[in-house]
Length: 224
Image (cartoon, rainbow, N blue to C red; front, top):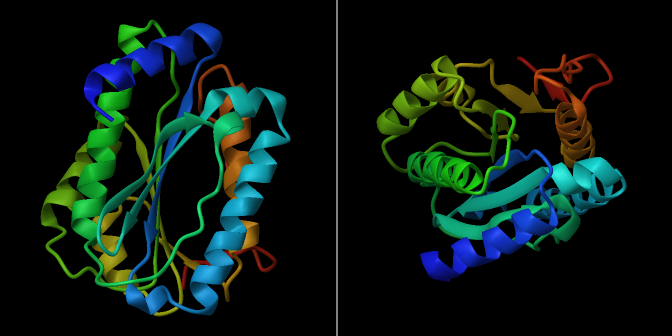
């Protein structure tokens, strides 16, 4: 879709739904190592995410979801409101170009902010949520620099989650925030937490809400 058409669709969408937006980019590893139970659990988690957001009337109008998969880098979904979101069914294949994927996500956020501003739409600080089970097959130095600058300037919040097999020390180099490791394959609980966090953010006045700790003994994550 060319830029003129995207702007036309944005204008119509924002006219019909002028609510303040809470954008979130999901950066999802679809490399070959995710094949099997991991990709099945991830797809199930995405369906849970869709259902949870759409069950909250205000969040469905305010939260916007964009999806970038990597293995190779692919724009799986342009930003769209949660009420229009349909969870894709992902397939695992190829390498892990994590650095390129992060760079694409940052560019998406910059372009989306411009669209909000052009149409007079308010927005909360965007989220970038990375999920991976491997190590990057490309250089992540530029991506790490973009993440650091984005966090420092409050341009977006970046979260990194490592699935079994992930190089957590590499995620630590990429993320300013403490990377989390997924317990077993608790993608369903992860996306329930993400949807509730985004819903709470979308209803706040400042866009800043205390997030529940996912690394409790019963949570979906660990910091180890």
